Length: 400
Image 1 (cartoon, rainbow, N blue to C red):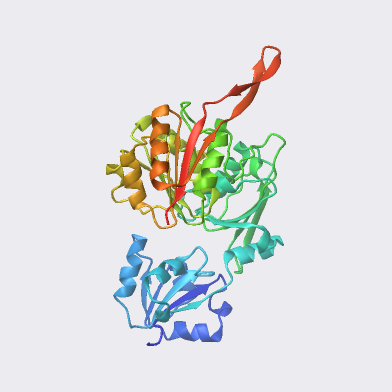
Image 2: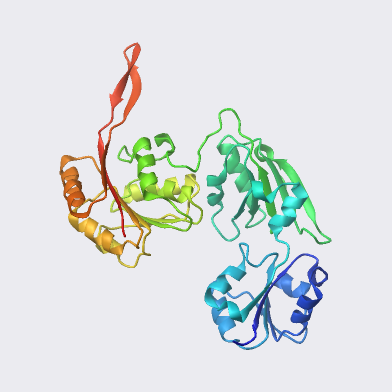
């Protein structure tokens, strides 16, 4: 096993002065240095070939491969393995080829400036990603540290907070931390009006008004927060469905016949970095699902026009599958074949015909078969009575 040829170095606003002598020596001996314009200014080496971040960014791996065996340095801001380029490179090259040189991250610096414990907050990035994804983390008393996309991003986030009844939330933008141009901007969401540097870290201390929207990340959001046409997996059944699907970090869900996307949206909210694909042949329902995904903080929901099995071609293998529409023995067979080992499959049925299919599948494959009956209290004249919802038969099993 040869010596590592690829060095991923985290660098802060203090440039070379903030690096250890050994790391400075690595930069001084580099034949190739890759980074952004500001990185090349902070860590200049006149004798090295300098490369800017390629466009598209995915071409970076190809650029590095072309220089395999030379002394290559990649410069990243802060900790290269925390929402940064190091993870992408590490997925492609063997660990024996790489040496990582971490630096204090923007999150650590921001937590120190705010006096916050890292163990008691959420770290997020919307840098180069949809800003809406932070919406899922708006909770009473939550503390958020967010790497932002640009100078307009704090104002966008202030808008999200205010619209959900968190307008009193305290916001602090921290820029150029650790350097001579370090700056701080404080305010509250409902009156945020600062102009800030383009690359910054936003600290948010969420403060809920008495009428704030309470939207936890555990499944079972109110039906009313979703745009729908009446055909959807209702709150109580949805919570039971998600419990059987078991959302997990980075897991992939196929939501077959996703309708307004309520199950897929709650799957993505429940576990960080999870993914979901909603398969729905009706364009109006796909539009509702897309609107719900944006409004509830999971803009990465993928929507596919089609029916099973044709619509499954080329999709990433799932860890869980929910069949909420289009149930048939053929649909089950195609989904079951695609499901990963230890994958979870859940199918719900309301009609007698669909329930008969589930009974047959349960007899052939085992699993759990249950009937979920829910009644909700409603006004009955001047009094209150129970109004039953249609019972739902739910079949669930794990692939072993």
